[in-house]
Image (cartoon, rainbow, N blue to C red):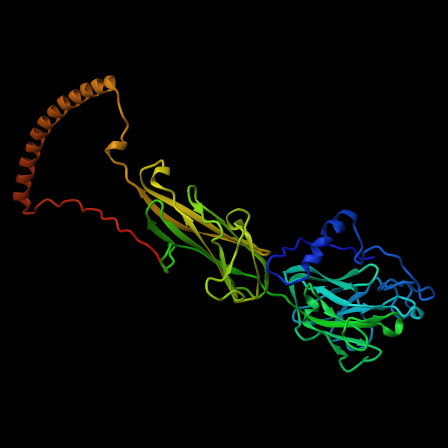
Length: 440
């Protein structure tokens, strides 16, 4: 009996059926539930169901236990059979996925399942083991939804992708010739309708009305990679920089850039930003710009999670990218404890299933401290200070008097040297500091 091993799947900005899969994560972990489910009443060919239920006959002469209704095999094998619960995969190969659809209701009851559909989760992450999950639903079935899975494995990490346009359905009406065409929505949460005379969701009860949904997936063993950059600009300007100077209290815009530079899909990419102390995030200012949200500033993100726990910015194929932008306000001068130039370093991070990377952008602000900001002193401190100044002044007079006499002696000696050598003294070079700023 197969066992289910589900991984946590983020659901933001994805059309996959991961929403449904996630609902069963806790159940699979805590109870060790089998690959198929839920637990339900079972039947036999001799004693079919008195109501509409799917894939619950345990001794189907042509199939076996119908609860194990999702199987996979190498697409290059054109002969019948060789369907497996678990299969070792190879790079570049295509595989067929097959899902049984059988309304187990007794034929004499004339019970037809309605809105019958199949939804399949095909994970696109990179792993040594990938589980495909199938869900079969009907509005008037009991239970309304059943599930099963198939497992693909390799000693090398691999990626699985649904082959668009490959889904079809075969039954007794169309057993060959490509059968009925199924929608690519079979790999979305909504699923694809199946049926008997047409793919209208209506499936009568009995063996003769059963069928198979079949589609292809392709395996690739590619190396994932990505790049990211952090930038900043003064609010209202249009050029991005690694570092800028600004005034206390000014507004700035921050940007996190992500690009999938690898050969594999990266799903559920997360962007996180850590603001420097004193810098305030402008609520509701986050926007996401990518291929799906390319107009204007992109998609407005209403949550403020970017600067706390991060936001899921979606799934990205190789060469695709995204920009995450938001506005923040720098601290006022009164909020700054130190005087002079202060560097505010902002850190952006991109987290993927294949690792994470961070980059920084720096804003330098200056707090001017005048005379009126110097520490205040009382009468006793003033008297003590004057006494100290007098002592310092006396010492300074003595020092400069002695220094003049010493300088005179040195000058006389140097003058004689110049005459003998004919060379003037060379002053030490003056060091000049050059500030370098990088910008795009």
